[in-house]
Amino acid sequence: MNNEITIREALKNDVPVLLQYEQEVVKAERPMDPTIRNNDVQYYDLDALIENPRATLMVACDGDKIVATGYALEKQARPYLDHETYAYLGFMYTDPEYRGRGINGKIVEALQHWTMNIGLTEIRLHVYEENEPAIKAYEKKGFKKHMIEMRLRTES
Image: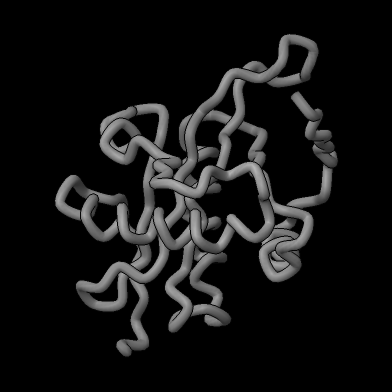
């Protein structure tokens, strides 16, 4: 493990590793969300995120090894809010071997910097209520709990 973690934008040739990490995110979220299908699930269109000028996909690297990920994507806000668009953060993943070293915070800072550079003033993300470590990490970066989504499964 190198002590120098670098943050950079993802490249097309990073996609195979990113696809593996995407499946780790799915695996981690399944116990918190009974509605995720049990078969193969794809959350992200990684190529589209890399190519989109109104998005950025960042990776943290230990040398040549990708150890964490996160993206920011400009989304349309609801018409009654005080901002027209906002940055939505997703694919926040850190290799378990690298957790607890502030790497996710560095990714969030890079995404926040990108957000400000394109003129957005609002950043939002979703996190499962049961995911206390993630909630604490986001709160350390200034995020505040905003809304709780509720669900009810009806019988057909």
